[in-house]
Every structure is written in structure tokens, then in C-alpha cells.
Length: 262
Image (cartoon, rainbow, N blue to C red; front, side):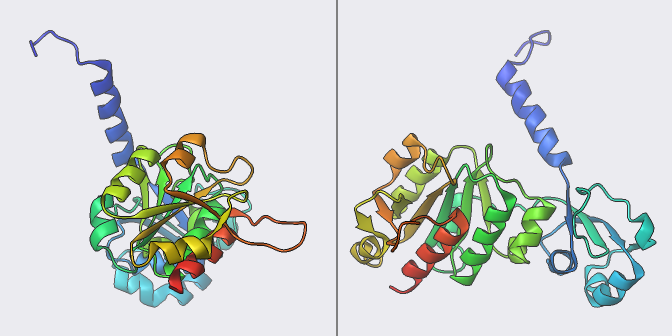
């Protein structure tokens, strides 16, 4: 490129996004979420704000992290988190976790050959609950699109109750492409759909010992058309009675349990 030539717009946008990602930080809050982040060696910790009471409860974790806390008056607990957040006198500014490449986590990651894919699930409380269930049932990762999904936030971390520090949460550029990549690795992709004919248990039995990806849509809209088309099979959770739907976090827990029993 000659000295006076301008960079293409896509190059400028990519560089701008990279700088924004490098500058991004997250405020975690609540005793449980802050403690788990403090003792996570992979978490970059920037600023710790505690009340005296919270410090007394977190002293061991603070010492392990090697970070100097700012001890503040409970009435002057001023950190950039949503007003009304139940912070319990503890807040920690951190860098988002980097779990690495999808292929590395899906093929050789810890846990069972099982992943959960979330299609535009934007509620941090739902995503946090899915992370908890994924950890309990030994999934290797929870995967979501970088845009139109819940980012790593304090509210998500608090709902995840520590799972965010241990359960890989991968944000990918394109969910359908990630699904194709998983299929090439040998995964069977099962999309949850209340109208499907096949049950989760039947599909899991058919999959045998093959790795499984459970694909979940947001409440209301469900799976997008492209996501549905990219699944190997649409499956349902059997229910009784007229009220036949679960929210995405409950549905994920039931489906994860079904896979864990094979």
C-alpha cells in the first residue's frame, strides 16, 4: 500500500473493534462472584472496592489474588454498576476472560463431549443460569454469537454463582459457522423446539457416543430460521398439561441432564 493510500473501511473497523475489545472491562459484584474471580489465576484484576465487612469475609481470597483493596464506607460505595444491584459491599473491575479457540475447547476441553449453543439469548440471568447448569453437568462450553447475546457482566456473573470463572463462555462471530465447525469435529447438533416430533431422549439415544451440541433459542422467538436449518435434528422436551414450555435456562438444565444420563 502506497504511503498516501487510505486503509479500506473494513480494516479500519476491524482495528477499531480490536482497540475497543482491549479497553473493555467488567465490574463484578457480590461476595460469591468477587471471591471466585479473585482466586481465578486466569482473570486479570484491575480494581477492588470493598467495605470493611466484605473485606473481613474475603481476606483470604484478597491475599491470594495479591491485589490492594480500596476500603470504603458502605454509604459511599460508588462504583459503575446498576443502581439497586445487590453488591454486598464487594465490587471488582476485571478484564473479560479469554477462553481461546472454539476448536481447542470443543475437542480437548475439560468435561464431557457436550456443548450448549445459545441463539440470541440476551437476558444475563438466563445465560448465567445456563452456565451454572453447564458446569454441573460437565459441558465443555457455552457458545453464543458476539452480537445479540448477553455479554459478560456483573449481573450474569452473579447469577452464574461462580460458574463464569470456570465454565467456558465463548462468543463467536457467526453462530451458524460455529455450528458447521462443530459438525466437522463430529458433533451432532440438536435444536430444542417445542413442536418437534423427536424427544431429547430419543435423539440422544440415536447419537450414541458422538459429541452433542444442544442448540437453544431465546424465549418467544425461539431458534432463528438459519439456526434451525443448521441443526441435525430438532427435538422437544416432553411435557404434560396445557402449560408446555420452559424458559431457556430450565430447558437447558433438563436437556443437559438427559445427555448426561447416556
